[in-house]
Image 1: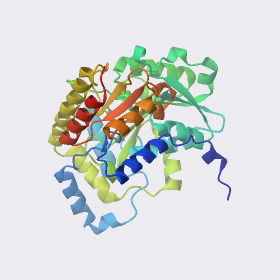
Image 2: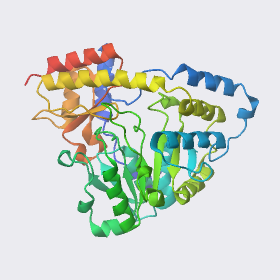
Image 3: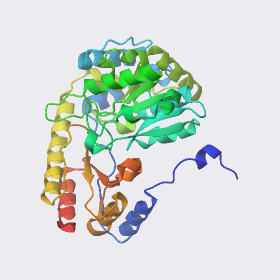
Length: 387
């Protein structure tokens, strides 16, 4: 059997060794606490579940859905954008339903990247940006996210010849994994750079509604000129705890949306209409559950930051996402620190290098673990470290 060359280009699975250690410890009966996966532990709000129940019992929902999503769902997304950002969208041409935002993020590379084209991707960043570039035959060009630049890419450092060959640029704010945030001024700079080199900006805005301390994350599309060259990927997974439901959307420039639609119509048949109806309820229904969830995550964030600061780690309380980006102690790499915590504390964190070379020196801690388990994890980490 001979696998395709594109598969051979995909980097090896970094976490295989850690997974092996976890399996070994579990066999020994060790109580493992995972702070690795960004999957909210709080259940989907009941009113959204009830909307799915009603729709699932409607025979009209049992047919093939529209490829681009139901008009009703796309109108709900447009209403949300108007309410949240003041951005006007045409639901018929500037909004598309996705089977989770990850699906659209992966597919857009096939719409715009030819072999040899460059894609500008954040490093550290969501691994799909790099793997999808490689699947499409493109060349991933890392944009370092460094602490001294507030984990924002410095466009002036991008090689001019690379910029001329680049077709796509991916951004993500609030950021996974660094939890950094961006303002409209940054997006203005991004749009100016992209227009100079005829680059499409793809903004992964999965965490746009997971914010704290009075901060409200902006949309790329709020910036003048962004609709000319931009598209934004949104997800209902994070704010409405619908990770397993797989419902998201792409919004922005109609020509970009149209090209993405060509890929989608040839690969999938759209998301189940009943799930789209649940998504409508999420977007247009009561938003109390979002605020309640943010209150929970804020308390957890404070617990983690205070604990880690108390043992000598330089950690800043993030204003967005439900992650904490933690510098590892001197003498450790991100992977060796993660391995030590598994062995000594039975706590799983994610090595920063798993998100790119510039993630070295950090680990990511997820706040999506029940309060008591998170407290226990912090107690164990504190006992394992002394500075």
